[in-house]
Image (cartoon, rainbow, N blue to C red):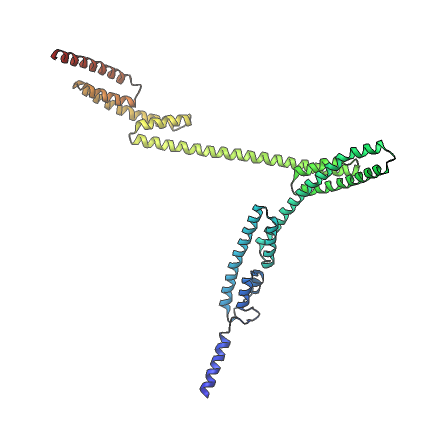
Amino acid sequence: MKRILTSLLISMLLLLGGCSTLTKHDGLPSISQIDEWVANKQFGIALSSLERISPNEKMFVIYVNKRKQVKSLAASYEKSILDISERDIVKGNWSGAILSLNTALNNYPTSRLIHDRHNKVLKEHQKRINVLDAKALLARAKLLYSQLPISQKEVANSPINIAAAWDLQSLESELSDMNTRLLTMAGQLIDDNQVNLAEMCIQQARLLTTDKKSLASIELLQDKVNYLNKVKLETAANKAYKERSRSYLVKKRNHRDKVKLLVKRINSAIKGNKLILAEKYLSRLVKLEPNNKDYPKLQMKHRDKVDQLVYKMTARGDSLYRQEKIADAKAVWEKALRYDKRNKTLQTQIRRANRVLTKLNELRNKRSAIRQ
């Protein structure tokens, strides 16, 4: 009996100590409740419930890990909502973007990113509505204004026509109201930085009134538009200047890089005795930067190398010529001439070799003819 009671007591202690995660702990919701909130994307309430976890909490580690998990899931949800709203805006589905952001704010009201995007989308959407309303208002104002001369003419032609007089009075009253609405709309458009459309509303309002108070309001709005246009022009000019400066700096940097690369290639070609290639690079360098400070030094270095090489090749050609190896001597001189195209000595020697080779060929031909 004692053993049975002891077993039951141990079981109860285990149940209480390893308490199911379904139960509430020291003001904290159960883990299952948190999981349910997360499943329903209610990250706001889930995270707020896990703000303070007492170190004395028996399941402290479990709750801390759960908080990390919920924060990670909330960040992913936040990102997905921002991506969805962005795609909706690109497609022109503003109502869809606003709806998804409204839902997200209900689920995660403490998200600063979602709040900022929500405010931005609402503001941009209102700007779009203002533009559409302004265009509709302008169209209506133009239509009414075009009807004014017709109504005035009808009244002038029929002074006793009560209906015509009433129509004119109604039209003038509507135009007066339209003037007020246009000025109000112009103010909103100025705030939205829709300057061109605001100025169109102002110009149309100017046609609809002769009232001094209205005209004063019109001039005040016109001054704001003029100021914004001035700022716009100055901003555009500054932007163009910065772009030109940036373009100039980029070109200057690219030019400097090209010059550095050419100087490096020239040095490498001279060092490797690729003197013809070095000469090509030198020509490019002087075209790219005529006043390059390294050019005279590189040209002299190249010239010294060419002179040494041509001297050796000329001497070798002379030696072959003396050995009556005329064709071989000519080949060596011609190769040397490739390095020093204006060398008069080489040109003379090649011409002399050509004359000798021509005479030798003539002699061979005569001998062949005699033998035959």
